[in-house]
Image (cartoon, rainbow, N blue to C red; front, top):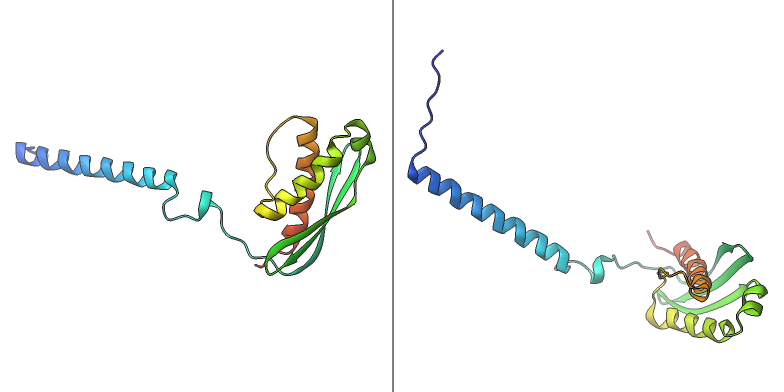
Length: 143
């Protein structure tokens, strides 16, 4: 067998360099468009559709159960009622009594049932309420 001798000329080298530069630019553009969310729904979330009805979601805490009843009409959250809530949380933090209705109102206004990440006790409880609402809303997803 004869060994193949590959000769790289200046013209071929320039062609390979140009091809490499084009590939690098294409990869950078692809990653830049992906990170900016171009072509994706807002923030990369898929828009979900919900069945109308009343759904109940539960979330356990160390003080007891939180139960949320969620009413969905026209594929949107219209009302949220807490049908079960550990009273110890309100006894320990009286301001929570005013924060919960505002939190539920914000969920209804923004249609946002994603809990935030924080370690404050109040936020912990509000996140548990949000998770109970999310559990109820998940039951209504149209697949």
